Length: 141
Image (tube, rainbow, N blue to C red; front, side, top):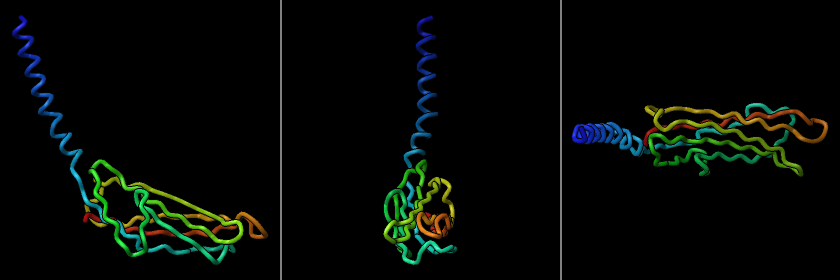
């Protein structure tokens, strides 16, 4: 009886290792993803301002317009795209937005856009808004 239990335990252990090991190997696969900020454009401005600062980030790293940023990620990781716009005056108006893309979903070139809304916080145009559109090109490197 004890030999049968030990044999059963051994068979179950072998099967468990055989099933779990390929999953672990797939999770650790590294993929290189190239992200390019292709545009940051002011698409609407209802009296919010004329002087602006903008920035875009991929996984916390700043990306410059038309400059590619290459990242090595696990296939289970995600890319976090973040966009920021600030109207510059004595009391700046700010807006930010972000989105995520799974690295495993990047099988061909993908274009992702983020809209950022900046709302005027003072003066006679208080409550008016400006809208920015940031576009990113994402592809395997």
